[in-house]
Image 1 (cartoon, rainbow, N blue to C red):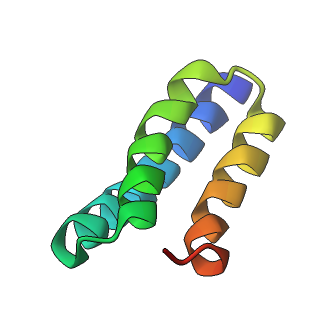
Image 2 (tube, rainbow, N blue to C red):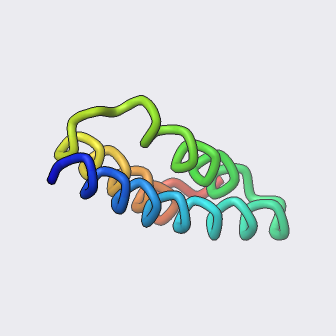
Length: 68
């Protein structure tokens, strides 16, 4: 069950990361661009589902608080 959930959460955060990546590239905004790339990569390296959700949620909220 955890393997399937991890794949689904990885796809959800990857899709959000793709949105951030496209937005950052079009607007030439550094933070959303790198957050999008991080959301692509992070699900490959985290094997614990709860840590994956916490880290990716923190990454999703990061551009709202950090504006450069």
